[in-house]
Image (cartoon, rainbow, N blue to C red; front, side, top):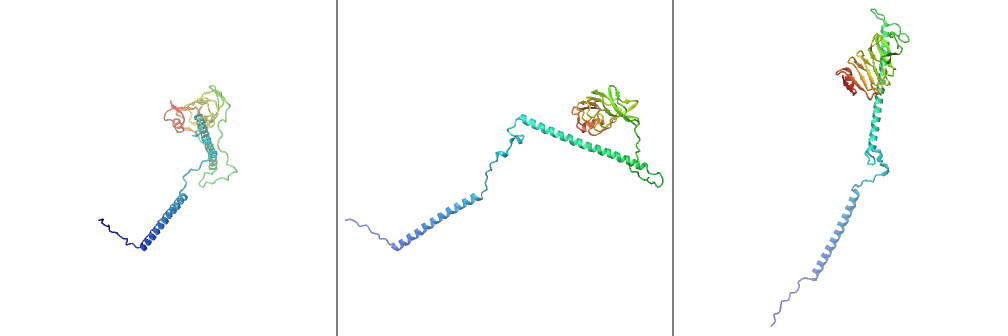
Length: 281
């Protein structure tokens, strides 16, 4: 005889099932709405980032504005072009430097001349003062009287000395060489001319001459402004220990020059100060 299995009947009411289905539908709709909101927020955030993020791209340069030839290190230039370029720059700088020095020396020279004129005028006024207990000044003239005594001898004619031709003048029985007009390239300045000692080489005395070698005697104490200026062929000059003054630009424009002088002499210190080639004798 077969045994009957117990039958279980559902105790869930239809109303409960309807409410459960409605809740599941509401939950499903809410989740779908949240998903769409997140997607929209993500899209908006992406768009905002694309707007606020600065661009890191480098704008293309205009090839027309780039000129390789304007820069010395351009790859289009060869070593020869670079060397020529720098040599031209060096030559230009040297020319500017020489011009600046010449302008300054000329200005100093004009100042020196003006100072000498004022000193002469002052000396003339002082001599015009009456020497008594209450000195009075004589009424000034239109211009101060010239009180400087004339040189003992002014510009003697050119005179050959040992094959060289010099112009000179006498001051206080001393010879001052004022010019050289000879053709000899090796010049030895004499220590005595007409029985008077040679003590100075005046301003511009050898300027632009073609001398190659010059020997100054031990009686010379002074070398003037621009005395050997522009002597491009001058290679050697012997300056004795007796020289105690060498004025500005005395050897400018002498690119081959070497100064022969005693160690610790004024000439040696001058050569070192101006960066001139020199050798001690």
